[in-house]
Image (cartoon, rainbow, N blue to C red; front, side):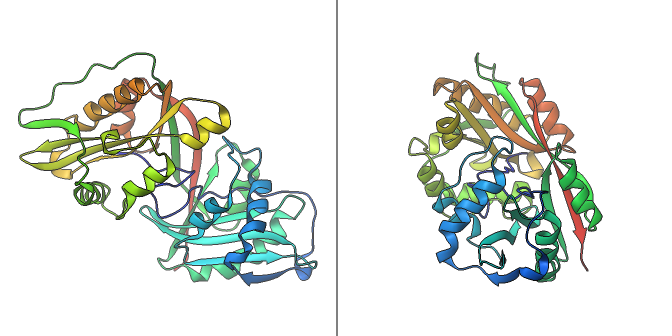
Length: 326
């Protein structure tokens, strides 16, 4: 199964890019001149500027708007802001609970010291965790950020891969085992879809209202974008396809996205996701998409074998670091 996405976070609890990036190494305000304070919704306009400055130049950067920040911070269990002596916002940190664990995210305005701002925020926000451990995702090419978190007790736990394939031809559809049927999701089946995804991921992968959220992100989206496998009247596997509308508009591209994808444990080993992925790729091809991407964990060897056989190749990698706090 796959479908964990760094940005935008459409189907996860929020937001989109839950990764530690946006640090700058140039000298800035001293820690003694800075103060921490809670987040207020009135901070959103200034936060837009902070995140856009912090992330500009990162992989596949897309500028943030106010609604992106609002969605990102909705549901965060703790949000802290750092201000300099002139009360300019120089840092943001927040905690979120996602299906794969509790995450910590940092953003520091360029021109501020990474160590001073982050070391001001980190000791205060870490004790606010709810699960006893925190994880963060960092671009594998960013050795400075990897070293920063490693020095503060975060250890490597694997990688998140972004895989990409060209949609220049239709994929043949594998024949399913007897009794299984592939079809598109029906409009009234959102509850069944959520139950299937959460059981497949063994965690809260989707929440009620997800179909409306996906439609809001792309008005062209409908339940026909979601491919499912049925067995004896029960949904047992899924692959959701979507358009990467923001990416396409910003980069003048035509790329789709697959995820989440998964199979109920009792129905694995029957190539259901492989068949549904091929079907979803063909659907995106028919929608005029030229390429498609997805995310999966480096250790998910069965998924990697399936998607490589369908023409996917590694496009980018983020390292996952975790720290046990109690």
